[in-house]
Structures are given as structure tokens and as C-alpha cells.
Image 1 (spheres, helix red, strand yellow):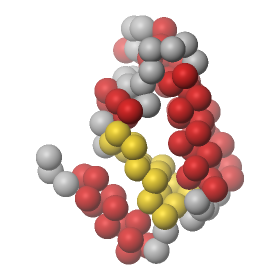
Image 2 (cartoon, helix red, strand yellow):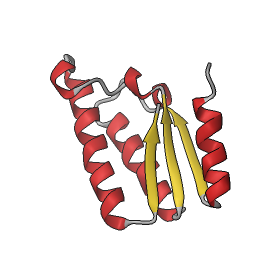
Image 3 (tube, rainbow, N blue to C red):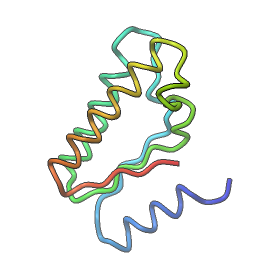
Image 4 (cartoon, helix red, strand yellow):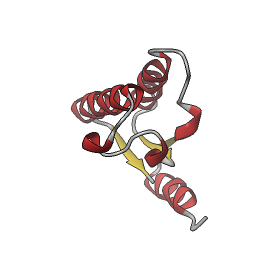
Length: 99
């Protein structure tokens, strides 16, 4: 509740770029591989909306530090996010931020 999402939206507005937002818990699914697929789709949307700002709110709920990840699902989600972040950076035009 301190306005991080509102600030990210305002930054996108000031820059005149698209704003793709998701709350991290919306990404999590109990089905194996489904969370990773949702992450890939989210980053795909950001690339297609370029120039855009992709904002994942409450990211700490699904992506702890890699060395702190205990469950296999957390490890897969973190690995998928890192891969997607690299691809987004390589494609250019869109930026990633989280809170």
C-alpha cells in the first residue's frame, strides 16, 4: 500500500509506452508447467506491446532468491522468469519492473 503500482503506471504514462501489469499470485498454478507458460505469455504480451513497461506486482510471492527457493515449482518459476527477462532485454523496446 505505498503506491508502487501507481508509480509504475504513471511512469509508463509519462514515457508514452504501454503498461502490462499482473499480480504475481495470478501467475501461480497448481498444474506442473502452467505457471511457466503464464510467465512466457506475459512476457510475450510485453514484447508485442513494445514499447511497453511490464510490471509484476508482489513478485516476492513467487520468485524468492534462487538460493532461497525451496520448492521445485519456485525454482522453475525463477528460472523461467530469468530466461524471459533475458529475451525481453535482447528484443529491446520493452522494460521489466517489479515490486
